[in-house]
Structure formats: structure tokens, C-alpha cells
Amino acid sequence: MYSLILHVKRSNTELQKLVFSSATTLSRKGQNFTVSTYLIESLGFTTKLAESISKKVSFEDQGINPDSVLTLFRSYGFTESQISTIITDYPKLLLLDAENSLAPKLKFLHSMKGASTSEFTEIVSTVPKLLGKRGDKTLSVYYDFVRDVIHKCQVLSHSSLLQGNLENKIRNVTALRELGVPQRSLFHLLVSRYQPVCGKERFQESLKKVVEKGFDPTTSKFVQALHVVYQLSDRTVEEKVDVYKRLGFSVEDVWDMFKKWPNSLKFSVKKVTQTFETLKKCGLTDEEVVALLKKNPQFLRVSEQNIASSIETFLGLGFSKGEFAMMIKRYPVCIGFSAETVKKKTEFLVEEMDWSLEAVVSHPQVFSYSMEKRMVPRCSVIKALMSKGLLGSELPSVCSVLACTDKMFLRRYVRKRDDKGLVAELMAIFTRVHKACLEQ
Image (cartoon, rainbow, N blue to C red):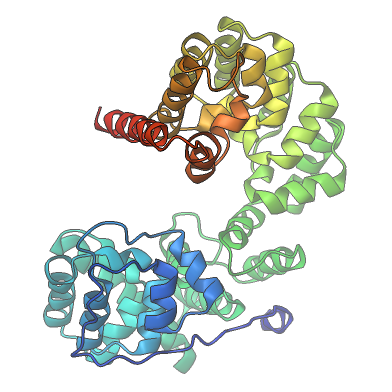
């Protein structure tokens, strides 16, 4: 089994480190600085990593002082490498009030648990999200659990005295760890009721199959696939593949779907068949249903009742069966929206904005847009422009108004105006409506 490890490529890129004096906190008040710039300058992150993290957090709120967070970690003995790992895994910590939110948790764990500084920093940096737990009791329980798992993994490296199920579990978890499976995924394997890591031969066989299918051990899909393969016998897998083949899928299609969403093999023959037939009721042909599920195998979990309800909702609003089928092909997640959401947004677009149903069909992604943050503020600007005769006699397309970013929308419909007074008026409308919608 361990020879498999040699066939999985692993690359551990060392983050560059920029050492700060723990006694110094940089003051950036009044300066414009982005998350990515801060991470590059303060922790030596690569541009690619910093930009990726910047999509998860923002320094827009007043009073945020990420320097104080880093200084706090250093004061507790965390190394620069550990701090980099912590911020990479849980960047939202940079937004916390270091003194009032983060410091009490670190103080509690360090003083109450009696751990050495090295053990304390290892545990926290291994699973920094434990600092997101609230309440001393919850924090304590989670910390103890993380410490226990880490110790068990370390024991395996130095002892062969473990016996039975625990021995299998620890050995298998360590093998997965060597393959590059993230620590957080290993914890779930250890506590889950459905254990793919308790056996020996079965585990080895399952792991081999998952590796051969080309799953990346660093992703959650690897563990999902291991769960599925472990639970299904070869005969059961063959039966499920045969069902898909009878519905028009090729064997290659089945395994491509499995790689996109491993749970696609978990559903019963009855469920797969029922979902297929129900999707055809949306107006899709056999070939179109096959294409839909190949691209979005997650739709296998949508209940027949929800699909039927979606059909009823759209047809009740005046869409034809053909138009509904077109929307599903263009944007399959339409099936998943609640009746209330579909009705509210359709009525707004058609009755208040006077777009046609055909216009909505052309861009069904509108059902995923926020009414408060996007649709109402932008449409208020469009209404103002129409009332002044500045957009001609026809509404612009739904796509040109709603599909773009706020920056592009304002550039397209507001900032390009020569009349500065008009620009100010339109900006006031956009901002006022946006704020009013959020406060409701």
C-alpha cells in the first residue's frame, strides 16, 4: 500500500518569510492598503497566494488592525512559518480585534491546558479554525480533540504496539497524511460513524482505486471518493454503471461524473432512473438530460418533488415549457430556486422593469442575483435614465444591466455622462437605494 505514496506527486512550496519585531505594530490608519499587498509585505506571501486569500477577506471596515493580530501570535511564540500557515488556512483571523477577541482565547488555551509553547503553537497552527469556536467549553473540547489526533499520528511514527481497530485507523490515517490529505479531512475520518479507515485490506483496495482514478489527495473529493468506493462492492459498482449505460451514458461518462462528484455512484437504481425521467418532464430530451447530468451530476440529489414544483412555478408565471427547458439548459441551477425567489424576481423584472419573459429566458442567471445588492439599485438608475430619455425608447438588455460588476455598470451607465450634476444624481440614486434595501 505504501508504494502508492511514491506515485502521488507532492510539492511543498516554502513561503518566503518577512520577520517582524514582536514589539512593533505598524500603523496604517488612513492609508489605502489591500489584503494582497499586506500579505506580500508583511508575511512574504507570493502574489498568487496573496491574491487568492484577498478574495476571502477585506480590509474595508474601519478599525481593522491586522498588525496587532500578527504581533499577538508572535508574543505567544508562534514562528513565522506557523503564522503564515495560520493566515493561509484561516485569513479571517486578520479581521479580529486582537485584544478583545483573539487574545482571550489564546490566553485560555495556553494557560489552562498546561501545554508547552511548542505543543501549543503546533496544535493551533495545525487547525487554526479552532480559534473560531465560541465559548471556553467548546474551545477546550475542540482543542483537546486536535491535540489527541496529532499525538496519535506521532505515536504511530515511533511505536508498533497498537492493536486492532485503533492500529488500523492510525496506520491508515498516517498513510493518507503521507499522500497529502489535509489534516482537517483526517479529523473527519477519525470521528465519522462511517469509517473507510478502520479496515486493512479493504482500505488498501479502496485507496488504490481512488488513486488510480486520478483524484488529488489535497482536495475534499479524494476523501469523498474513498468513502464511496469503500462502501460499494465491485458488483454494486458494475450494477450502477449498467444503469447509467441504459440511460444513454457511456462508461467514460460515468467515471467523469464520479470525478466531478463522487456521490454520483451512491444513489440507488430507482433514484437515478426517477431523476432522469423527472428531468425529461422539464421539456428536455434524453440527450439533453444526459448532457445536463454529465455537466452537473449534483442534480441527481434534487428530489422529484422539487423538480415538479419548479416546473409548476415557472409555467404558472407564464413561461412556456420550451422556455423553461431553455433556461434549464442555459443555467441548470434554476431548478433549485424556491418558488418565492422565482416569483419575486420575475415579477420585478417583468412588471416593474417591463422586460419581457423572453428577456429573462435569455439570461436566467438573474435568479441568482441579489435583489437588494444588485437588481433594485441598478434598475433604479436605469429607470432614472429612461425617464430623462437618455437611453432611447428601448430598455437595455437584462444582461448588460445585471450581468456585469458594479464597477462596469457604473462606468457603462453613470460615469460616462458629461454632465457632472447628472453623474452625482445617478450615484446618489444608486447609493441611496442600495443602502435602503440593505436596511430593510
